[in-house]
Image (tube, rainbow, N blue to C red):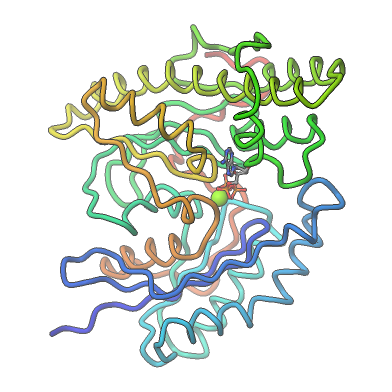
Length: 357
Ligand SMILES: Nc1ncnc2c1ncn2[C@@H]1O[C@H](COP(=O)(O)OP(=O)(O)OP(=O)(O)O)[C@@H](O)[C@H]1O
Ligand SMILES: [Mg+2]
């Protein structure tokens, strides 16, 4: 039996310090041997958002320990690791630099190959940690910094079909939570509060719902939430606003996903129609349920990463490392941190005032 590759993945692009060891089974399906994630929620709580310098300091303090813990938990020895994969972007440069430098140093001192990984590619391929998934597939990436529909053609080959022209969806959840005075990180708590509210209570806008193809926009929605939140008198109205926000997001994604399905089919004429939803917001159970139902209606297979692998983690980074290792796609040790590394590097910049849709 051939030795299966064993990859150490390291993630530090924002406010999670993470390390993981991943290998594959006889069927070629990636297997997570350890997955250690240390969140910095307590560090940033009092500021209501991520403070880059504090995040970087916290990564520096914890990274050795997190990597050591991931190796110990995997039951493997350093000698058995075949390559080190670190997130190189996108993200906060002071944070990226910590995991990237650690990974390069580890690779250099142990004389093993180094692999630079795009954090978004980690999210994009994260369902592979669970099951067999062949290309091409349609991806909806909904996270704290990105919201995009992408046609995933192969490892490293992405065609963007649509993107947010302003806020990311996770950002919209986080800002709404802040306006409702929910403690940081509040985005995921909206879903919980929404269960106690009336989703029909407030009529919220659905920006660019009838134009711009499958591009998305959430800034106008946030402004509407801001105006209503100032008039809220009691907890019930707070729950109603959370429920109305959650419902509006579901309606936007329903309509835009149908457009993305059409564009994906035109581009690929696929034999099997597969729809992957990944990134932190993919943990939202009501969004999942709505998209699963839509997939049934439109004859798509719906695929989600396990809930615990939707947010930032290093297993997804190690898994991209594993795919690259098999293709011998290694990087030099002078590989730079790339704070703005896009998946589809040919896609036009579509943000800010005056964007033509
Ligand atoms: N259940 C949930 N419902 C809605 N949003 C959620 C839920 N759980 C997490 N999120 C959101 O997911 C986001 C975090 O996701 P993730 O860790 O993938 O983002 P990021 O790494 O900060 O951004 P990116 O991956 O774009 O660089 C946060 O904005 C958070 O509010
Ligand atoms: Mg992320």
